[in-house]
Length: 350
Image 1 (tube, rainbow, N blue to C red):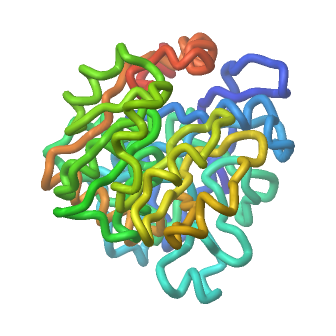
Image 2: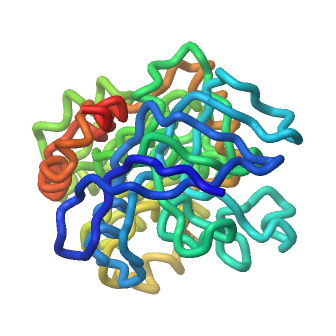
């Protein structure tokens, strides 16, 4: 059994997003049905819609930063009831039995997690459809609770941009007494700034744009370094415990590796299209490390949302109607947003 559900979808790599009716499964005993109130626009959505990762199966209904209200729960659901606020992030299932899943690291499932959209749908067949829709049905094990004291629209990007930056900061135990760098002030970087500041670190933003200095300090930066200024960069040589690199454009990581202390770590959360050049002698002399990190597990994502509720942290957003999403994609390519677009899904009814 399934229910027709209004959405916006891309029918090919070159077509615009347009209205589309998809089918959502009738909730099983473990499922939570959610009316979607807000959905963030992630750069991943644009990549998938345009098949830039060469794995898109059309039609694609994007959206994995979902905040909504529970409309129905299955008979065995214990964590949610009708009327509760709920959120869904980048994945809606995983194998649940590999070592990573058992350790709460579902994002690193050895069989690969089932993504919220463009993943295999084991219930209805075909592919999963995401949050650019009026509703979604998800197993309660992959549904998250939302702090009620936060702006719900601004919570939506936390489900991807938030957890993508929070997870490495927690894994590498960022906290008071540490000097932490954030490279890039965009959708990811602005969340990295907020979290590193709230965790008590001394936070330095690296940017190529002098006009971002004031905003960076508003968001939590103690210092701002213009990365094109060699003198400014040299002043910070061998002084960082940890650097979070949130840049998705091609760039030289050696510039930042050389700023790390002994045993310092540079973590990539941006995903440049081409391989990055890493010089051996950027790593060897100070036993430095370069690593990567991808979103977070369900328990850690809930921890992040609770942390945001306690510290009143949300994304800086620009709200749009679903009918404006194609224009938003064009602006996204120009980095013309501070700092995340969020769709008001009530606009689907227009």
